[in-house]
Length: 523
Image (cartoon, rainbow, N blue to C red; front, side, top):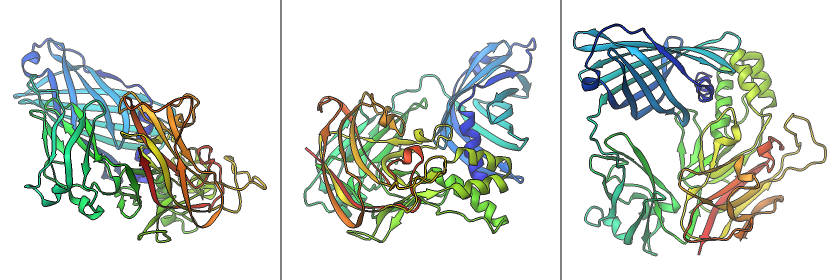
């Protein structure tokens, strides 16, 4: 419950404006232009206080804070693009902060008032400039609906940039050298760096087995003064169509992300390897997969805390997407299931206090298991926007194929938890190719079904019961009067769900969709 509260507190913060004020000016002239003004780059940490214990809530390793002169003895500070845990907060500004001297240091304080639908908050800021460094603390005293108090802390430690640092954040060279690692000899030809799309692709020999592609060792060069994570020389897993993300940070803090993958005519989508989420304790297939587990886990983790004090509370299945040993090939497959949260919402309201009431109002009655290509970024205010579909890819898709097994649940519910007599649940399995102007554009759970969605090609299955493993081979077809253009940029995505109407929170609990050995074949 502690962690989920942290999520919702800051999801609300991202929808409000921040107004700030600092102490009144004094008639002292300080060397602001020469010693203080400029950009600072450093580490920002967020924590939430519970029972006197600070629980880590997120870290930004290269946060930029801009300091400008506001008067002879005052400065203004701006924290640009403040975000953590995938939640975008926006800019935080502290204006006209009066400086006081303390030896060689310059100290200041400020306040910010936050008002939102579900909370109000007083934010106290205290900072100090010392020999080219800036240390800043934000204490957030939030009051939730009903008078529930919650304390959040933000700490920052950064160093003043000289002003001549480069803003270039590029990967200038990405090669595989057999002198570095023998396995790199499987890479053939040269890598292709698409600077506009921020993608890097390379070819491997037809004889390359998947197990040999799990530890390729790229040698990377970046812009002067920039850094890259993962670092050059670190082994990476490029097997089974996996995409590795490299983050380049320029001297001045500018950040760019590159997606690196093997250029292949067949994108293999297997579910043999799963990775663990340390925050909410669920598994997701390794690679560029995502699921709705991140949203459901917020509710379940809160219920676990309640159940420890109230044994009569029953925690529903923790994950709506999980691995299973019921497979067509290999060791594991993916199992998507639809879950009822009707009783869980009642328990949250009865035992969870005001916070539980807020969560119950936000949670749907029915949640479907979903697995897709892309990412999940929790957005409590607009849950469908949490699902971000697609990854950059070059090439025209021809076929979407794989194996599935589906059993619908017995009782179908609408979004208001009413039983719909005679209605049988259906799964949904489809893939899309859509046009983008740049990598930042993404279709989400809302926009993907809008009439003006820039979908160029689609391949989808007609739902039906399949009590045993059933093969599907679906042709990609051009839609919306559009046609594939090799000169344009695209994202590719597959989306699978155990309830076809899950996006409107309808379905039958216990509906189960199993998936194994999916593939997308390209021209």
